[in-house]
Image 1 (cartoon, rainbow, N blue to C red):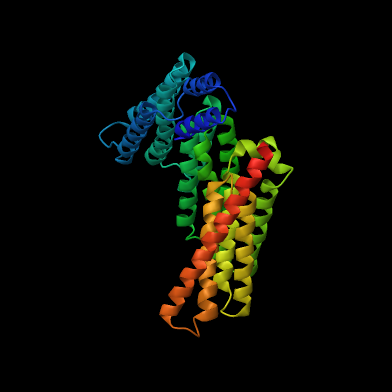
Image 2: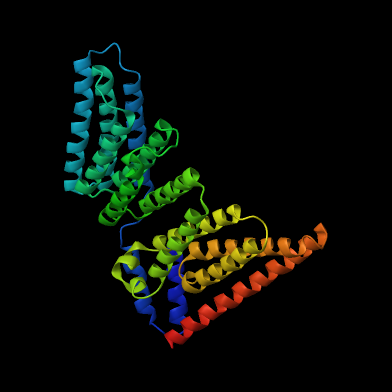
Length: 367
């Protein structure tokens, strides 16, 4: 996808005389010489490792009653050692795909080993402790081998740990373990930056959003929803305006910080709409929501597609709501649909004008 866009842009630049054709060919050749970000062989290798690890976990779950305890423990420990030593050897030889696959098998086998030894020797402890330990091993493995797939496994384990916590305590807030998802998300973000596992960052950000949603179910408070709006918008503005927007940290983080901060603010606005009863306060909130949507498009609309489309959705939904609240009591249903269509057309017109304005500014900067 990116290569096709790059090739089209280079053709346009050559046609406008901005760069010679030879330079365009060199740039395209340099891009083609880079290692591919997606490789079907690597993906299949990791999927095979996941399947093998799942098979091992299922085998452990069956308890292997016919096999002596010592043999069972020795077998799974041998699998772990062979997986980690084999991964280290393959990393040293540059066989990255096979090394990551073995590392995934090793990380999954470690969880099976904890469960197996706990079953056999009736060790004290609970499922939550097992998940914390398993996550820690996955995170340490990812850091030691600088492995993107191991980082992804750690991300999924963080979600599994959160799920176990909610299940064990019936979604109630109990003890310091309630803060664990936030701590895990911080660890994951650090791993993502260290291992260059960009796609895994979404597991960490969504974990934070999920944790905030769970927190709201516990308190169901107007001011908590308002705090989501204020804090989300504050972070969004911070990463969208100088000096943070131009900092190396924000640039290397990509579009995710701005989008997820805006998503939290959007969730807060939705919760406020649920909290407020119908009336003037809700109309004022809708007008504020429209202003926030336009602000988001103005600050991130050109460069951040995720923010742009979320803001479009916010804007359109709120316009429809305002239409229903202001004319729904006077006009019939058919008239409401007619006016809603007109409002959506006006939204589209406003969006087109904003996009043209962004394009004009870009052209002025280029000149």
